[in-house]
Amino acid sequence: MSKIKVSKTASTNETKKSKEWPAVVYLWTLGLALLSYIIARFVLDGYPHPYHWSIGIAGGVLGVGVGWVWYRWRGDVF
Image 1: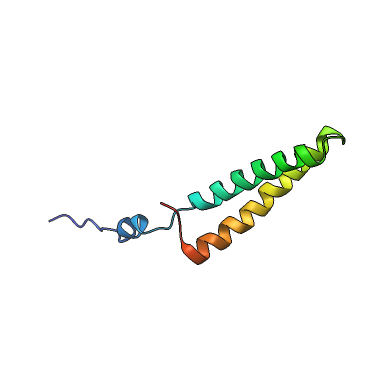
Image 2: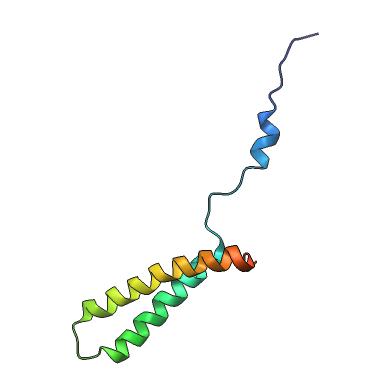
């Protein structure tokens, strides 16, 4: 008989949690970024264009937070 040692880490690798963000975080991020950009586009029409983009980015950052709160509260959407 051979003395082959079998590692127990093979079974624990399958149970590792994924390091990807949940889909609900991506959806909230994209949704709030787009919505805030569109609203800023109408409200701040007379202002320079970087204001619209910065408000869109701020909406995306807010969407990340809202998405994580939603994930902790309700779980993922899929």
